[in-house]
Image 1 (tube, rainbow, N blue to C red):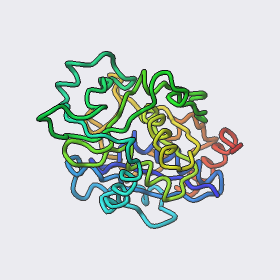
Image 2: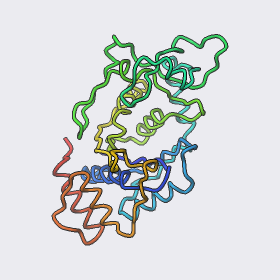
Image 3: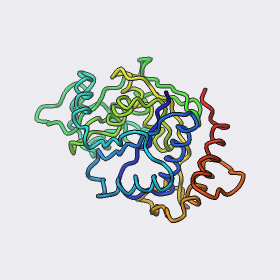
Image 4: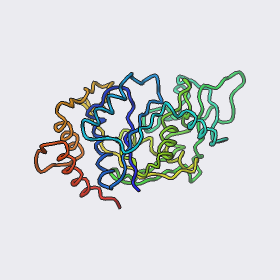
Length: 291
């Protein structure tokens, strides 16, 4: 059975950019006669805004999107992440390096603009050093397992050499919070997610997540990364770049604009939210029928 999900971080109200991701994931689940789940990714307590999650859930409901199961909150799942972390065993090691030290010693940049970790603590901490974070080892550059490939249903063939383009990445941060990469892999596996539909801004995280899935013995879902919504300066639309909360007083307008970003062209303006979904699901089926 198809199981999809929408997993917003509650850093503010739902905006046009996050609506596009929600819309695409909902359309794909409904087109495949599957289940659609909501997950609140509030693992980063420092960025979580009070009542933002509830506002997001209410906004989705006003737009006709409701979870087919219990809503999962990452903040309640510390034990599950810790269990997965322990399962990784020797694949994980303590790192004492600060961001400045990594930046000063970097040899190249990762695909997302971050410094590739040079492996300073890979073979143990230097005397007098204490752990700040925990990293997972990626295969060496000459190991065939370092090349991760997958077919994205929108973007096509994606491949990345983890050793060359990513490096050993963080699973538990210096502030004590679990990293996104570990939490999302554990949650997707335990919720039985078969298909992940999300924004292309998360495309570069996918190879890391596939690597963790393999280490933990989880199956790999199918992926579809839709184009991110950007502002007039070409920046991804977000709270930090001035994204405005959605106006649910005119839900059909918001839905039509999000559908247009995905390339959906409705034959006429729907008279209700229900009619919008009927029309949009039909068009999505014609474009993204499951293979």
